[in-house]
Length: 139
Image 1 (spheres, helix red, strand yellow):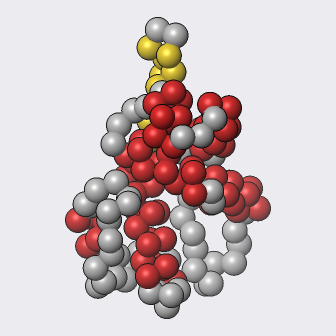
Image 2: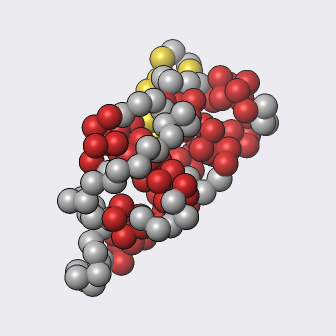
């Protein structure tokens, strides 16, 4: 789903509901830490529990929220369930855009929504799963 600029006011409510679910799923710092770990590769809930130091039930709830928003994929190996990012490049881009908005105090919000405008800043990628020069060149 593309986010349209002000010129296109006819946005479907269902699209906005799905978009809100994605943003809501990323609205918790612990879930962002889970995403960071999943940029490094697949993890079981028990692996994430060890990384976060939270109760297994809490981590499972966070994983379910991310999965329900369509951000995680999973596969079973024996009795263990492994989780990965469903769309790592798109999530990396979303995180990069959020980083740009935060660092610039929202001044580039309009630019970030326009795909034909190049962002010329130097966004930090330490917390978004690595260096993605293609994303940096786009924005």
